[in-house]
Image 1 (tube, rainbow, N blue to C red):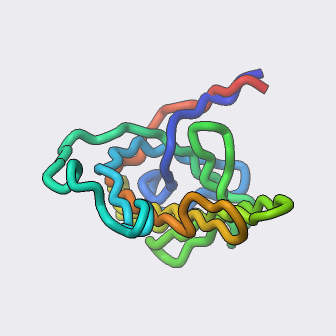
Image 2 (cartoon, helix red, strand yellow):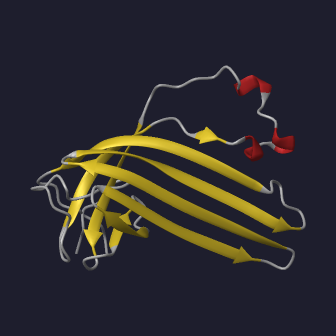
Length: 164
């Protein structure tokens, strides 16, 4: 069986009649991700590489996310790779977060994602923040924070297809 899904960001059901998805329902949103912004901590010695300082990019990266309700208070944003991020809704505001921690013999690596967006009818705008940290021996970088702004729209009449 297949569930049809798309790429990387977040979606919601406010655009399907002005209400959030109910348990058993989902919404698909098509997103345009802006250029990723990296903190200085993503580079050795916290210094942005000189060769990138004048770079710019106005292309967007398209992605698709499915949003579904687990219950009245809990939502899941299903990303392109099939992974899900749990979150909540307060009116038009949605917030999702997840974390992984990998403990090795000499170091611990953590990754945290925070996705926040506003859905106003079919229009979606928000930001995702990915923070990675390493503690212990032989860490290439202690931490790195990347931020991506996005805009998008609820897409009606789309099914999600994914191999199971």
